[in-house]
Structure formats: structure tokens, C-alpha cells
Amino acid sequence: MAERSSVADLAASLRDELDRYSPGGKLPSSRVLVERFRASPVTVSRALAVLVAEGLVVTRPGIGAFRAEARRPYDALQQRGDTSWQEVALSADASADQMPRSVDASGVTTTLDVPPPGVLEMNGGYLPPGLQPEKALAAALARAGRRPGAWRRPPLEGVDELRDWFAREIGGPSGTVAAEEVLVTAGGQAAITTALRALAPPGAAVLVESPTYPGMLAAARASGLRPVPVPVEPCGVRPDLLADAFRASGARVFVCQPLFQNPTGAVLGADRRREVLRVAREAGAFVVEDDFARQLAHEDAGPLPPALRAEDPDGVVVHIRSLTKITSPSLRVGALAARGPVLERLRAIQIVDSFFVPRPLQEAALELVGAPAWSRHLRTVAAELRTRRELMVTALAGEVPVLGLDHVPRGGYHLWLRLPDGADEGVLTAAALRAGVAVAPGRPYFAAESAAPHLRITFAPAAAEGDIVEGVRRLRTACAEVLPG
Image (cartoon, rainbow, N blue to C red):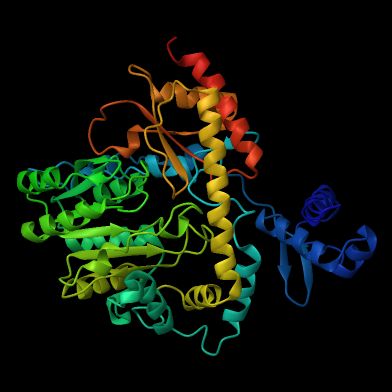
């Protein structure tokens, strides 16, 4: 029997026997339970922890475990009260010429929620457990916990050695980024929020790619900013449209993902890279470079262009990098890199928001990226993502050719599909869920109206490669149900 099942079974047995004891009565000792149920001490300890979490048992160190005192039933109607006053309070922060702030996380939770049992995940944004470096992470965390001073307060900007590592990663061989220009953050999303709050006042416009990452749109709107879209092509945004948007909106910030953009997979072309920086410099604006997919390049991606920040001596670019996507959702460690007075603004906002990233997590990240297993992990993921991409592209062409795929990226974990004109992506998404596969509708990726209906589907979260093919087959069933023709 697997340990997880043993813990659940033992917890169920103990739960059934609780009526034998009066409230406050002592349960048999752990040693007695080990002998009686023929379970390991670890299994007994974890089963008791389950009952403690449920409020059925309390433990007293050195004394034993006891049945919890009976709790008074919760009367929901009595405790509910009248919260209608909050609608006024939450809307009263807007000035006369502003709309109330919009805090809508629905576009993000679509990719964060765990699908119901039996539903294949093709909408998530993380590697499956089988591709996460769990053993290397566990070893790194154990070594980090034994480092001298690992539990002391870290420098506010981040552990020096980790800042140095990020600087080398961002600046590349040219060494154009110094460790002093790096702030360690609690992952990429926290870095995006910090950058937006630092660079634009509430009510200001911020230019965004269209379509773009819903988490960034949500962060911008929650900060009181107004996202203004700039269309994305397979080779990135058009500099002329970017210049027009700066003039029309008065924005001083442009947020972009130049490498394997989410959701389109676009890569900003070499000529457009220079032009984007020139346009931003002439507008007196910052470019926030979200370089989330650099470590998600596929085996056949070829040489990658350097980060925009590595080619920017004038402090136009504020660079964001994270370890989360390539490792685990729980390794919330990232970095901001900037040059000039803006660095102090970023630092101050991060300190006010969260003080600092916990030192054990920073030390564990250092141990991970410095271990021999790190390079092996990167190679494994690059090969596996290529295989999964090819499987999904082949399956889509054979099963649902009605879904348009204009661009096949060689990095990232997602494909951007265009639906037939007139199709309802919300209806199709719901039909797909009924068919047993979770996909993401395209609407949350647009800051304004979209020109056509889309779906974003991902090939990274699947537990096994066969799930990708099966997921596309289930998507075909949904398409047959709701799409015209």
C-alpha cells in the first residue's frame, strides 16, 4: 500500500473511533497505534496531523493526542451580517474623472486552478511534477537550510551571490549587467507588479502587447493603470504602431515579452528590437521586458537573441526574470534588473510591499542553479518541450484542422489557435470541459476588443505525452458539438 493511501486509511479508521472518547479524552499513544495498525511511526504521525487539521484532535507535545472539545455549530445566517456597505467603500476611491479600480483575477485563475478529476490539463502554465526537478530541489533546500546564516535576515536587495548569478544570466557574455543593478523578487508576477507601480502613477496609460499575458493586465488594472494595446505579429510589435500609441496615449511604459511571447509565441525580430528601444527612448518611456520564457527554449530553437536589457546602456529597459517556470510553482524566486534612479524606486516599492524574499528560498535557488543537475534539467526540459510541441501540432492538424495555427513557436509551452469567424470561445471552452479537457479562452488576453475568437492550449502540464494526443481528441469532440459546419 502506498504511504499516501496508508495515511488516509489510518486517518479514516481513527476518525471512526473518535466517538469512543469523551471530548478532551486521551487517545492511545503513538506506539500503541503503530503496533495496533502495523503502521510506521511516520504514517501514524501524519494521520494524526490530518485529524488535527480537521479540528477533531489536539496534540500536546510530550503528553499525547486528545479528542478535541466539541465546537459550537456555526450559524451562517447569524454570522453573515450586512456587508452591502462595502460596495460603496470599494468604489469611493475613484476620483471624478476615473473609473473605480478593477481587480479581476479570473484570467489568471483560469491557468492556476486545478482541473476537476478526470479532466486533462491543457490550460496550465507550469511543468508537470514529472518534469520538475523535485529531487534536485529537495537536495538544494536541505543544503540551503544547513548554510551558516541561512535563517538570518537577508539583504533587502537579495543575497549577493544570487544577484550576481542573475546579473550574469541577464547580461550574457558581454557582462553588461552588474549585480548592483539586480533586485531579487518573489517570482515574476511580483516583479511585474512592482515594476508597474514604480513606473506609472494611478490613472496613467501603460502600453501592452495585444494579445498579452492576463496576469500583467490584472496587475496593471489593480494598480489603477489603463492598458492600451499594441498589436503583435509573429516577429513582435510594429515599431510604427508603438510610436503612434505613445503619442496618442501619453504613456511612459511599454510592457513586452520579446522572446516566445505569451500567448502568440512571437519573437521580436532583430531590426524591431533596435527600433523598439529607439521609439521608447524618444518617448521618454521605459520598456518592461518580461523574459519569462528564456529557459523554456526548445531543443531546436537555435541561438537565442540576448535580452533587450543587455543591449541597453541608457536604462530604458527594466528586465524581469524568474526561476519559477523552469522549476516549480513554489520556487517563487525572480529578479528585476534596472539602471539609474529607477532602481531605487523599484527597491523602495518592493520593501514597502514585502520587505524581502525569504533567505532560505534564495539560498535554495543558489544551491539549485549551482548544482550539476541544473544543466541536465535544462537539457531535459528543452528536449521534452520540443517533443510535446510536435505531438500537439501533429494532433491538431489531424484531428481539428478547423482551428487555425498561424505560428509554431520553438519556445514556451503554448499554442495560440484562431477559431472560425462567429465561433463563441466561451461556449467552446465549456464544451471542452464537458469533454474532459481544460483549455483557455482567448478573450482575457486582450486589453480591448479582440479581432477574432481564440483559444490558448498548452502542452507542458500534461502528465504524460499520451495525454496530449488524448486531450486534442477530446477537443475535437467539443468542436464537433459547438462549431458551425
